[in-house]
Length: 358
Image 1 (tube, rainbow, N blue to C red):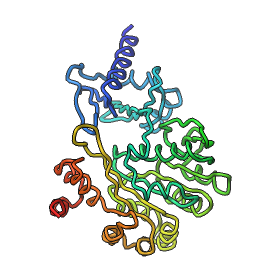
Image 2: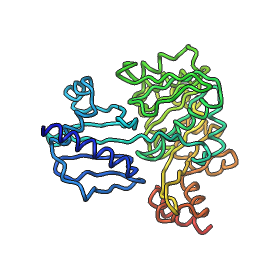
Image 3: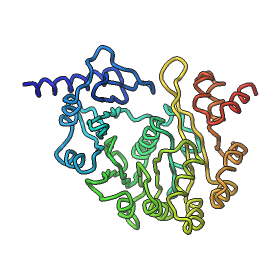
């Protein structure tokens, strides 16, 4: 009876979080439930303190036997599932001081249009290319998945393509429109990221979507695929365009870096780095740092001169490139974002502050 009561409490808590518009809910024994709304964390003061039993019940409520096996073996697990109301969620479970803790991320069904995301024209053009690598980067909760799904859905709606995604876990479930989409999940459909990328090489795939990059082996396969007749759109966590390139270069050994960096420079059509900021009047707005392949920028990447890219991007604005600070200044001048919110996202706040008055 107590177990049934706890499961009813878990179901009620999930429903409440969805109704409040939460992006994520965190459950840790000994603390109040915490949710994130519009980027801000808040404790649910009208709820009871989370117990060990509640956390376990949340996991048991959403997990399949295979997920329980993974948690027992790896001490952590991440998977996606669907609630009774068709709300898709991603659950992350791990151990902390000998206790199970879980986070539930709520995947909103709506896929935003390019117009709603204010996608720069250069990104729209690159999304229509027949081959190459397009990297979408940013920190957690910066809009990476929103842009990724928007591009895939726009292509699905308007073009006849064969699309394959490799994800861990699958977030949005696409419905075939003009395109034919296959979604493959790591651990269930393919054994690894590298194996997933390798499986589409020299096959009839127009677009490969990859929701993470974790190794040099995977990155090499992705570069090889993108230099063929497939456009690859890849998500990764990074704080800037330069940081993304530093991470990718680090996947190669010292002996490999020169040749594979040149291949990365050839293949990469664009890198965007994203931020979501509070919009004046409510909601959030996206800021885009944009690198696009040009003679100068490709050469800098090939040489490993990543620190020179911001200056090159700033002077190549006519080609659609912009630094994050330039994007933040534009949002402040448009009245979309408050200066203090822009400064909080800048890696050079003093320099950004001096740009506001120009």
